Structures are given as C-alpha cells and as structure tokens.
Length: 566
Image 1 (cartoon, rainbow, N blue to C red):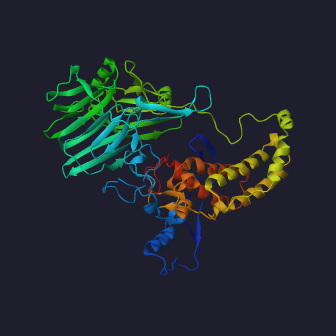
Image 2: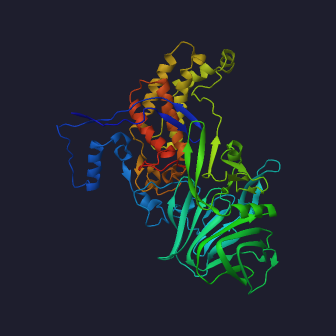
Image 3: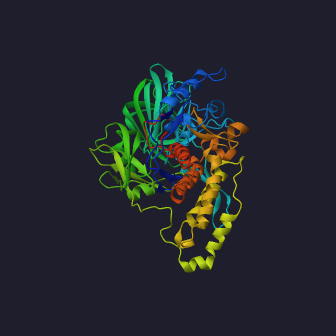
C-alpha cells in the first residue's frame, strides 16, 4: 500500500543565497510517499529503540513527514553537552526553537572553553554587560583603539573597544544571582535578575535603543560609575549630600555626560564620587542615555516616557517594517537610533530624524541617526527598498566577441570534462562551494549565448551534476547533517565527532549557516533550472527546503526552527 503524506512542501521553491539578497525561483511540488507492506502501518520496536523514537517513527508515518526535520534527518541532543544554552529562565519551555547568532547571543551561548564572565551585548550605540552587581552600560566608540598597521597607507590592521563601566544601574543589596533570559522577539531580548519572589531587576535590550532601561521591583537603587562624578544637574558634587529629582544629569571625569531618568522621584545620596544610591525600596524604572549637548538633553526629556522592549519584523514585496513593542507613554513618539541604511530608506510617514540631536557612533557600523516615530501612532519604521528582478543568468549576456577573446567555451568544456569529486570526509563549506561551482558550470552550458545550439555539453554536465549531488541528497558524508533538538536546527556532526567547536568553521554551533548552506541552496536552485528532470531532484529539493528553513524561516508558528537565523 502507498500512504501519501497529505501535504507537500512549498510549491514555490524559494532560495536565498546567504542573506545577500539573491532570490531565485524554481517551482517544484514535493509529495512524500511511504511504502508499507501490510494493509495497516506497523512499526517494529526493538529493545534498542526508545519509546520516543518509536513515537517519532509513528508520527512520521501518519503526519506530514515531508515537512518534519525529525523525519528527514537523524535527531541529536549532543548540544546539551557540546554547547548548551545557558542563562535561560526556567519559564522558557524546553521545546521552543532557540535563536542562534543573534546580536545578543553572548547571553545564552558560548563555547565550553570560554570562561570570560564579562560578555558584552552590543546594542549600539551602547554596549551592555550583565553581572550580579547590575546592568553595566558603556559607549564603546569612546574607548576604541587600533592595533598595528594593515600595510595600506594610513590603514590599521584591526580595532577594538576597551571594556569600561561608564554607568552601572544596580541595587544596594548584593546578589549572587545571574541575569536570565526570560523572553525574546525579532528585535530584542528581556533578561531578569531575581533576588526574591517579589524583588527583581529586569532590562530589555533592543538594537539601537536610545536609553538603557532597568525595571525595579522592591529594590534599593544604586547608580555608579568607574569614573568620578564631577557634577549632578550642573551642581558640583558634595559628598554625603542628597539630590531629589526624576532627572539627574551626571557629568563624569572622562568628559561624558549621562542623563538619568526615573519613573518617580528618587532621593539619591552621594556615597562617594563614584556612587549614588537610595536606601528606600523602589519599584519603577531608571533609564540612562549618553548626551553631548543641551539639545540632546531636551530631546531625551521629551521622549523618555516611551520605553522600547522589543519588536517584530513585517515583510512585504517592496518594504519591510519594524513594529516596535513598547511600554510607558509613547504619545510623543519613540526615540531610537538607526543605522545609515535604515535612515536612507525610511518612509517619512512612520518616523523622522531628530535634527537637533547628536548622532552617536556604533561600534562597527558608523554613525547612527536618532529617529522619532510619528506622535500618536503605534511606533513603527517602514523601510522601502527599490528591487530589481533577479535571475540566475546575468542581466547582460557576454557578446560573441567577448566569448571568443576569452576562449570561454574552451575553458568551460575543460572544466566540465575534468574530474568532479567531493570529499566524503569534507566539510559542508568546502563541498558546498564545489556544489555551486559544478552547478554554475551547467548553468553556463545551458546559456545559448555561450554554447550556441549544441546541447551536448549541457547533457554531459547534467549527468555529472546528478552524480556529484548524491552524497548530499542521501546524507552520506562522514559527518552527517542532523536535526539538533536542543536549539532546533540542522547542523553537521563534525563538531560533535571531533569535540571541536571550530570544526567546519563552527557549523555545529551555527556559525555562518546562511553563508555555508547558501552554496547548497544555490546549487539546488540551478539544478531545477538546468536539469528539471534530474533523477533525485525531488529529494534534493526536499533536503534543501530544510536548509532554507534553518537560515531564513519567516514563520513564527514553526516549532521546528527559529526565525531568521543570523
């Protein structure tokens, strides 16, 4: 009996080469057929097969096996010892997909041998470190230093940013508890340090946030700095004095100015020239922002009531949007920093630059522009792109003269007739490069501008491409692809097999998946165009569809993969 799985995988075969924006379309509908010998499907369970494995086998027979990674790849929980997620709050279910390579990933993942406690999260323009004493905030651009010469005139080999504690938002009572991740979304992450059932310190980290905000529940607040505090609200510092306000502008000995905003009045005692604190318990928010001019302070005064906690991405054909999640009073708009490419394509009916404010430099991506969303509207940015049609063939075909001058056809024949091979022990990076190279040769051989009407070269190429992709389609490399049940994704076993986090350039710990898997996605897309009747094409497409979901999943309801792996 043939039991047809009720759903097909995507009928429109979308391919993304890395995250570099190349999209090719090759439509192939896939239907998985399971052949069962008896009239009723049965599964023989031996002593070596766990109940969970038996249940999974049954699910793969009766459910949509074509879209389940567990039905198409061996499952592995090896990440639980190899590179387990850390600092996850107990409230997070163990079966949810865990993001990898997010800009805040230092909070939850690191190689086993990495014991550095000061994991910086680069929110830009700030950097944040979460330690038991509180939320440590710095402006990294101010501590940038260069290392060595690159060999180019005036060029540096590298640059780094020193770790500094410009402002720390914490509490008087010490805590041995670490911050734990309680939730995340497309644009941010929330962490909490619990000290008692009703006492905690929480912060939401969002890329581009204009303020760093700490939410307090029944704690005695402390604001400190590794620099000396020169003045508070333009008044010279007087030790053992107190200042009561909801706004404290701190001028520091390193030349920086930080505006500190509180949701209700605090009476801060000057303990030392490095530390301010209140002994009374406080429930509310403390926000800090770097300010350079009186105009910066005025802008932060205007927008400090609107607190960003995260947000979600919206996608359309010619634009994408950031729907900001906020709390507090946002009637005047949300103040947030944008990178240059955001500001360049921003639609003015959603947000606009705050022209009076200073731009702040990011750690690696240039100066950032302060934007304010439109007042009395849900805070959002809509970013419009001018797209051009993308095909696998170049938009400008080579001329006959160019082909003759470069002896392109002769070189193409030599490359196609040369031995093709992939190392069975090789990496998915290097073998993937070969797969795209071989497929690209077939693409050139299918171009009449190159070969004319003769299709014999294409036929030879089709045969060789079919053979060379079999190892991948059948998952027969020494280091197989497996479905990681810890983070939820497709990884090579090479890191597990060798106990080496850097194996295959870190594929096992999700480094550069969009880049490495992009070669295989591109090869499959080309195969659909140049050899639509290729034996095993449906199996190739099905396998590649999981790589696409691994790196570019846009479905928030997908329980098998996180969204938009970076």
